[in-house]
Amino acid sequence: MDLPTVSLLIACYNEGKVIREKINNSLLLDYPKEKLQIIVFSDGSTDDTDSIAKEFATQGVLLIRVEGRKGKTHCQNVAVQSATGDLLVFSDANSMYDANAIIELARYSLQDGVGAVVGHRAYVGAGKAGNKEGLYEKLENWMKAKESLLGGTIGANGAIYAIKKSYFVELPHDRISDINEPLRVAMDHHVRVVYAPHAMAREDHDNPFLKELSRKRRIVLRTMNSLWAERWNLCKHPILATKLIFHKAIRWLTLPFILISAIASVFTDCKLLWLGSFLTILYIALAMLLYLKAQKTAMEELQLGKVQSIVLYSFGVFFSSFLAFTDFLKGKQKVVWESRS
Picture 1 (cartoon, rainbow, N blue to C red):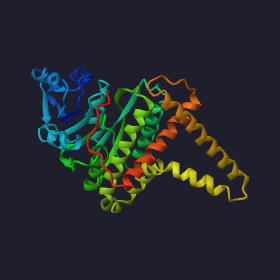
Picture 2 (cartoon, rainbow, N blue to C red; picture 1 turned 90 degrees about the vertical axis):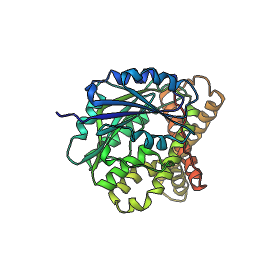
Picture 3 (cartoon, rainbow, N blue to C red; picture 1 turned 180 degrees about the vertical axis):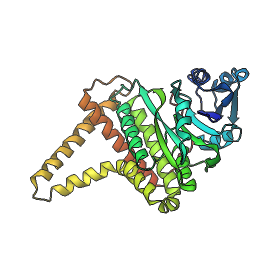
Picture 4 (tube, rainbow, N blue to C red; picture 1 turned 30 degrees about the horizontal axis):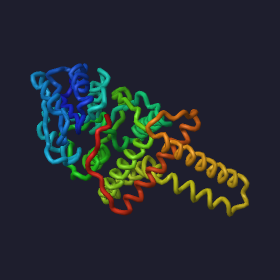
């Protein structure tokens, strides 16, 4: 197999805690050294991220610093200008790759009609405060795998995805590149975005529950704004638009949907619908009680059973998505991101 040249681009903002580990992890990847370029791009970091990255200059690691806190998408546009690889691999600083991760991305990228490849992100240690992020990510990966069988998946995650450089598009700074870049590849070049299940990135994930919901609210808001900006292009690609509705939009609006359904069922004579309404109210009541408990013990370990954790986390996802939708209707924007480490 004739492997392509690769540029690995690592996004950073105040990642001093993890950037050394990430660079060492990248240098140890099973990929021909002469075909792998490593670029660290820093969005005006104010900690020791840049100085640590400079220590690896003699090993070929290139640091690109962008002043002014312009956001990940703008910095990514700048960094790609210095990329020499035919395949661009985008990563976050806290995402550690399995040794064969880039080989797997490259292998899928060589398939006919493929323009972008999405890797598999796995969370390690998602156990605090009822956090079921690992379960959520498993659902995401399952959906990507099934969509790949139906002509291609939609969107990516910032931890691990690859795009052929010839297909890369410079996006406006307010777009979320993880979503818009693969979409533009599919729409502009009529190629597939596929899922590579064995291209593995692992992240430590033990964040407090409420902090994670705040982060999810920001991400969903950015995604809504980014997709809205592409609405006319999506109208020309009804299959992609349909996948987005089922993959994203329905999940974002789950909370109002189940509330409307529960209220509507009260006005019917169907006992089965009454039962559904009762269970919905019970679910929301339990979730609210657990949510209040989480607020009181935000910095401590919550002792919850499996069912309680799933109820709390699922409600948190639905609630934060609904809040993001209200932010979207108000015209709010989020451009910059915060370090997760």
